Image 1 (cartoon, rainbow, N blue to C red):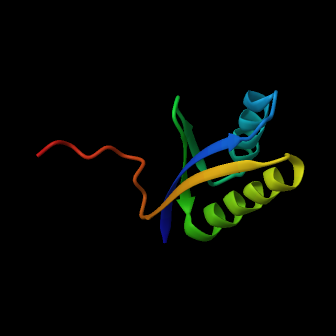
Image 2 (image 1 turned 180 degrees about the horizontal axis):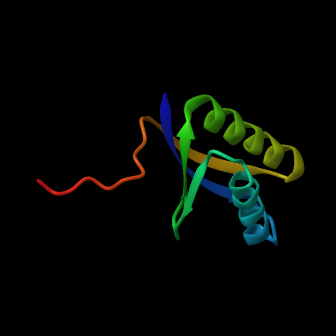
Image 3 (image 1 turned 90 degrees about the horizontal axis):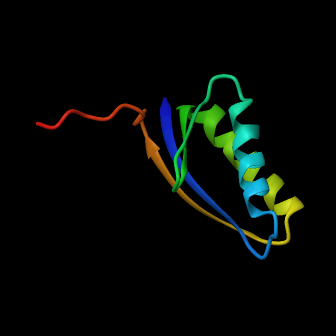
Length: 88
């Protein structure tokens, strides 16, 4: 089973917030089998359900353990939504 996950990370009161966000993204990109796409608003993760969910949750935990406070906004959608559907 495949999954698509959209994430936005908001480190609160962190002077180096961009560093925290990019470190999070780079760690996810190291996971073989995940497709990680980033744009100016969010990061999307595509892949096998168990692989994607377990790694995203581990990285969320890592951020919560290493930063003062951080908010994540997440969407979990079953299936691979990495391809844009053609307009009908």
